Length: 112
Image (cartoon, rainbow, N blue to C red; front, side, top):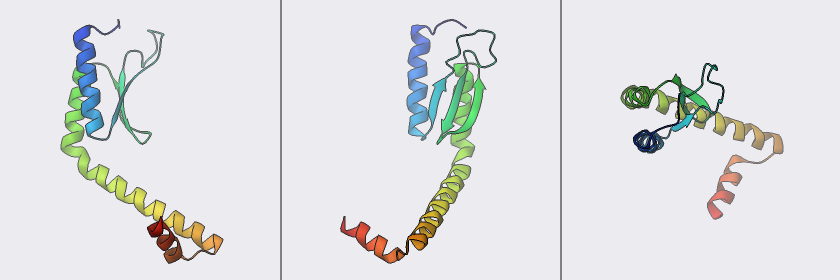
């Protein structure tokens, strides 16, 4: 795969902005070896979780972003809820281990 043309660069930039608006990151493989399986491909990630990998064209990237927008919101919201729950539980366990009352931590945070 050769370097991107000017129109492809513009489209790539537009798709990166579109992915960012959805909270995603669009990245291109850095492989230099044309024989590598992921040479010249794109990946869509969020919080180090790969949603789409080995997208071989900007058309495939655009289709993946459309698919994520249509179907991904519910799964994404569930993932965020689980992340918040785990973070809260972990903080509670740390507080207990240190002998800190949760309400004390909350009151100190409210004063800051």
